[in-house]
Length: 280
Image 1 (cartoon, rainbow, N blue to C red):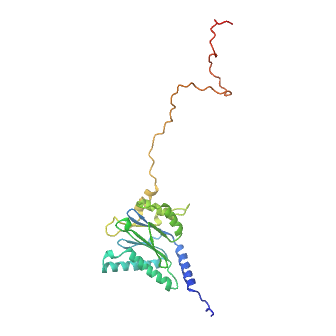
Image 2: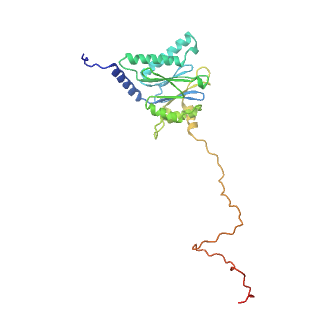
Image 3: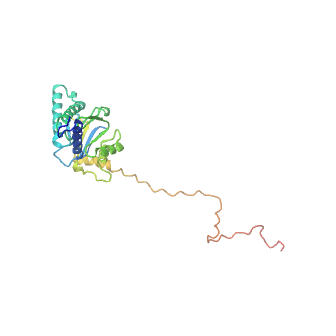
């Protein structure tokens, strides 16, 4: 049986769509999401002040994405509608990050398998809990796969290299200033320059806030946090240490060695002293 002209196997079609999506996502800049002692922080290089990569979905849920803006903006708006309808119909506590991640995974998977072109997006849905153990970070890829991340997540751009640097510097229970420092270190290539503060998009899900936990960090507040993390504390001034004194000793001074050019001090002859009374 001959194959029709232009035939491609399903495996090849899926492989081509996956490669296409990966290339599109890799062209963007990386986004980092990580836990700190009071919640979850989102950090993304973004020169635009109008087009956000990081947004609020619901009281305790945040959203971050990389890729094509028009595509992940549709996902964000759909997530907001889902959260509002379920929170109004049932209860606000029924809106969870897991439910939102399942919704996104279903939509992304269906589009990837049924549409000619897959979405060029990667998404993180994060939910802050009452304690650090209740925090959740879900990373979703273009094909609908869901990854339950612990501690931190990186996506877009050179995501693997960024995740490696995060793993080297991240630790549990960091304060917010230190978490920002770790995020910027991971986003900066070795030997490269850091993104200016004016081109950073930073937001937190702060469990200590009442009601709405989402808060954007901009302007002087963000600058103070970054300065607190990057400026080392001044070292305490200490008086110069005095050189150690040699302990007193009763031993006679050592004689100079031969050939040193120094004459030894005069000493008495060996044996009995001749006082003139002894016979010649």
